[in-house]
Length: 299
Image (cartoon, rainbow, N blue to C red; front, top):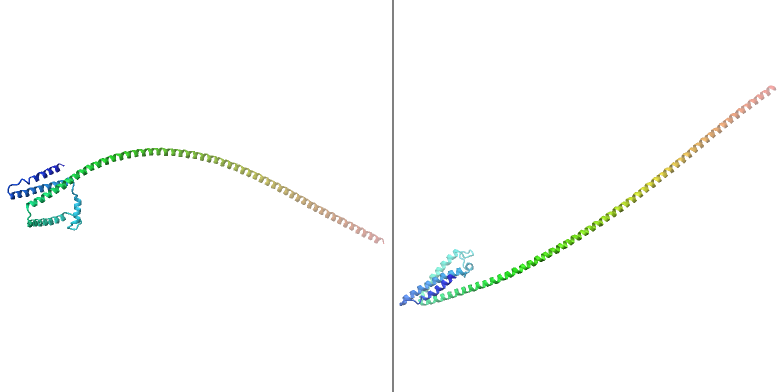
């Protein structure tokens, strides 16, 4: 800002030196040209400072524009080589303009008026840019204040929202903990009930299996007893039948023996009778023969 005030004061003071000319017209014109050259030099320096200080020119945009408009070496950007070519062409254009101005030979007063008008226009534009910069800074400060206020309100809203979320999270955590405890309790009760039911069912199954085993054992013992009785009965029956068969065989044997003895006795008796009969017949024959013999002898 200090540079701006100094430049403005200088710009205001320098034009006042223009009227202070000598009495001769040639000296007045020479001083006027010299004064305007000094003013232009100071204005150029001040404008350079203003451009750099207030960032009035977008150099990247200018370089990009120059690269798009003028590219001497065809590399796609505006570099030192392009600038050299451009400066050479500019120097030619300046020399040409100087020759044109010399050929036209304008008057010194016209040049002074043009320089003065150009200077006023440049000063007006710079003043407008500076005022616009001030307004922009004020607007930026106001915007920053509004943004800071909005940020503070946003932070408060976020803090309240965060506190609400933390409270809701805590409530949710407690509710979930209660639900979890209730689920765990219900699960424990269900497991205990299932365990009791399983134990009861297991006891009933064991009792049923025991009763079934006892019934099967009784049936087995009854079957074994019946089998034993059947076997004993069969054995007794077999023994009885065997005894009866033996008795029958004995009786048959005895009968056969008796029949044999009887046959033998009868045969013996028959033989004895036959022998006795034979002996009797022999005796009778002998007696007859004897009698006949005696009768014969008697005769």
